[in-house]
Length: 278
Ligand code: 7PJ
Image (tube, rainbow, N blue to C red; front, side):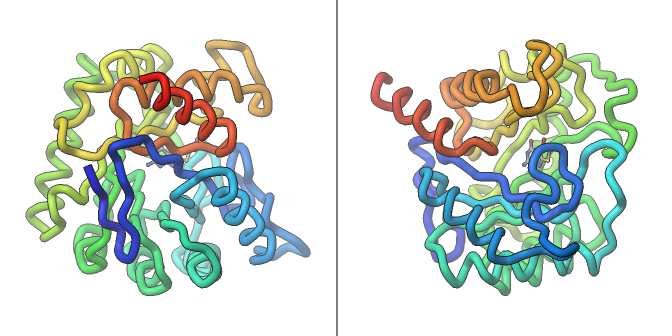
């Protein structure tokens, strides 16, 4: 399976590592890392992008909105200011696919113009104008499942059959994407681990990962350092590497094509050995 991302093509016959770069002041793991003197520092952003590339990441995922419960609401202009200059700077210097983690139509359009290669939307292109904006870029889109809204989604997640419900939602978003003119093979499925799911829901989604997407659809998984690992293993955010690696390998074995992570080098090692031993 191949994924055409503008001037780059990703080979999804082996799992690809997507490295996380949050240009937010307040994300749970790397929030505020790229700020100096109160503003976003593009040199720090470029340093992180360089690290992701050097360590074996083939996609850099740039986000300008924290979806952590309780995070500050970001305005459209703030998001544009955090994301678009970062996309432009990375695009000029590195031969890597740039993914933008956004639900905002103007951020999709301007990021694509600045060189982005994937649109990654935790709201699955449900905001007004998002489907049209994403379709107009011609880029692949990642549609993620979420139950509820970031501020309250973990209060009381509720499903009869979490796998069937997540799958049905993603199938519905695929149909909406295709109706809007996005090529079917450019729609990436993502169950949205931790987005309106308790630990049992997340574990059931992991166990039955192959049921979550049609076999010919790209599948992205994000579990890196998430609070489920913290709760199941009783580990603080900076003690979740082993747990994250275990889940990255499990996901790849169960069919994930793109693994979204903070710890790129360690994940790339694990996936390389998995490939060699498969
Ligand atoms: C995900 C994401 C995910 C996709 C975040 C965090 C929260 N995008 N953005 N999938 N998670 N596609 O990293 O813990 O799971 S932000």
